[in-house]
Image 1 (cartoon, rainbow, N blue to C red):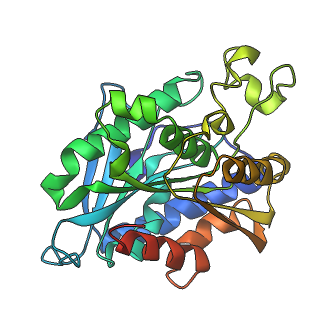
Image 2 (tube, one colour):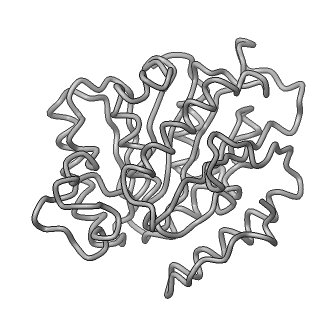
Image 3 (cartoon, rainbow, N blue to C red):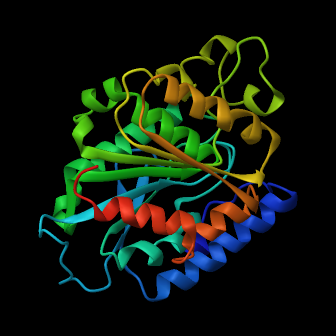
Amino acid sequence: MAFDNLPEQKKMGGEGEAYAAECLKRSKAAMKDARTVLDQAYGDDYWQKVDLYLPTDPGAKDTDGKGWPVLIFLHGGGWEFGYKEWMGFMAPAFVDLPAIFVSVSYRLIPERFPAQLDDTIAAIAWVHDNIARFGGDPERLFIGGHSAGAHLAALAVLRRDLLAKAGVPSRAVRGCLPVSGTYKFEIGALEARNKYFLKKPEDAPVASPQTYVEGNRIPFYVTWGAKDLPHVLESGMPFVEAMKSAGSPIEYKVFETFDHFDISLDNANPDSEWTRKVRGWMAQRRF
């Protein structure tokens, strides 16, 4: 799908609308100098597509010549808004590693959970099965996302059973990088913002990444802003503590000056702490 021909969505309102416009503006600019493979379908639905951003130099070599590491990233938007085109602005900070940046679209509300999780698993499986054709290493995948995308990234990585069923071994996923996500839904206390995402309150545990922390050995780097949305501020630290209690490898960072949208836009800054951390992880063969 082209930037100028995206399906119309209703207005997010407020800061969210300004963020969406800024994402598209920056992604359009990034696209001008990018080497891309767009609209690769991982399913039959219109929204089941990924965009690939490749290293500018096709002859660029990874340190051991086994293929470029891959960052798979999911946009936010409360599971109701957004396009994979939002996240293209992040690509320049990673393709020169060299690495492949993959932006994922997925079915949105009115489709209810678990459609979004199913799509995330399917997208990861497509990348695992196909990325070698584009020079990527299918055994060095990093999964991240912002906001709703952070929730989906964390949940998919922790659902090793679903990934294995889709043909993605745990060893293929080298790290999870959720930014400003929600990690636990409560039965009987379903907030208005979640009522349209879950079909029924009883779905809350299944939709909660925190439910699946036991046994995880995939490193997580969990971040949010000190000025983030209330539900993000409430969710972040309990998830970190649950992961630590389960013996899961996890690092976290609260960025003091950022709100829910600033923290996402800063992920394109090659000198930012988040980007330098993620690039460092991606450059490693093993943790």
